[in-house]
Image (tube, rainbow, N blue to C red; front, side):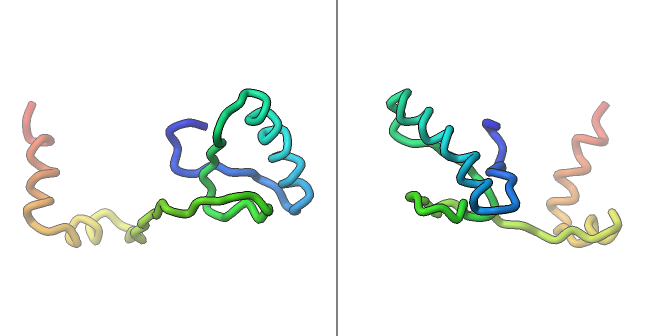
Length: 87
C-alpha cells in the first residue's frame, strides 16, 4: 500500500514468502521497472538486493494520558493546548 511506513509480506515460511514475491518480481521485469519497493519491519530473508538506509524511531507511550501530558515540556504543552482554546 502506498504511503504507509510498513507493509511487507505476511508468510509463515520462506517458501511461502518466495511464492508471494516471485510474481511481483516478474511484474517488475515485464514492466521494465528499475526497482520495486516494500517496507517491512523484517528483511524479506530472500537472496535479493536489499537497502536498509531508512530508520524508524519509536517511543513507548505510557498507559494513561496524564503521565504522557506531564512528560511533555511546558512549551510543547502550550503549543498543543493553544489551538484547542480557540473557537
